[in-house]
Length: 218
Ligand code: B16
Ligand code: MG
Image 1 (cartoon, rainbow, N blue to C red):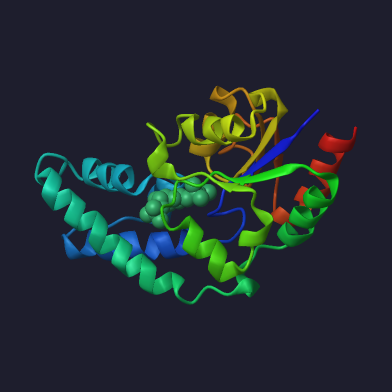
Image 2: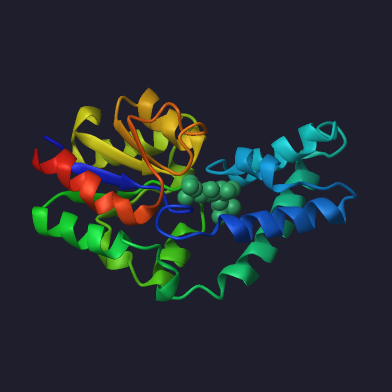
């Protein structure tokens, strides 16, 4: 029944969440504010500019900066992030992911990347996993980012499959909401309370192959 598996990147294929956190914290400190790890949870899966808006709003600074200033701040964060992700190598692929990608290929299941990150193509290159992906959704090609379902629906449209034939693998509550609003099966990786809208939650990526096999074969 399932024909397409859509992977999130940050938190599923690799753990770049820490690099995003470090880069946002540096940017926040540069403008005299701070963020902590708990607040950072809200930024997972959320686009660069929306993340900045959340940080500013949390400090009542939404109206302090012009759109141009905000674009410059987002660029500043991204430049810091780009320096950090230069260190990425194939060793940074999370456990169990390569086996899962290989198994899906053997089964003839389509594989897509549904990441909010504009840096996704460079990251999958660094990880040397580009060859597994039949399609990488360009986040600029859709109207709304996660938690809207647009990114995932674009992947389904590309392969001409119905949302009910798609499985989404996500670590962020925004991504799980996007999958469910898109009427897809959502597998969460992480904390069950945070990912409470998911159809199923596993603790870590090394459990994914088993659960996906069961969903696809049975
Ligand atoms: P960029 P995902 C998301 O990736 C990240 O979780 C989120 O923290 C980040 O702000 C967003 O990508 C945009 O990334 O600044 O590189 O374009 O989890 O959807 O793979
Ligand atoms: Mg993610």
